[in-house]
Amino acid sequence: MAIYEKKEEGVVIDPKMENVIGKMFERCFADGQYNQAIGVAIESRRLDRVRESIERSHNIEEKLGYTFTLAQQIVKHKDFRTEILQLLMRIFES
Image (cartoon, rainbow, N blue to C red; front, side):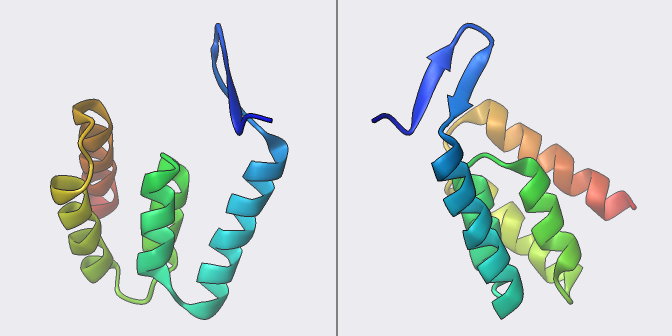
């Protein structure tokens, strides 16, 4: 069974996989492992979870820097990297 299927309108994620990823986020948040949560969010391309991980942390400025570094050094897809950087700017401005 595939983790996801390509459809005309986009990618459909297997609900079981979505559930596993959701549990990973909750575990990271419960343990205060915000860097891990940011990494999982980037790997799963969940900008909403990137934002949530940064905002739930106790040191937003540190997490903005960490996420910026990940975006610059790890993310190879230019469009996605740009989306992350735009998100960071919105968080920084608020």
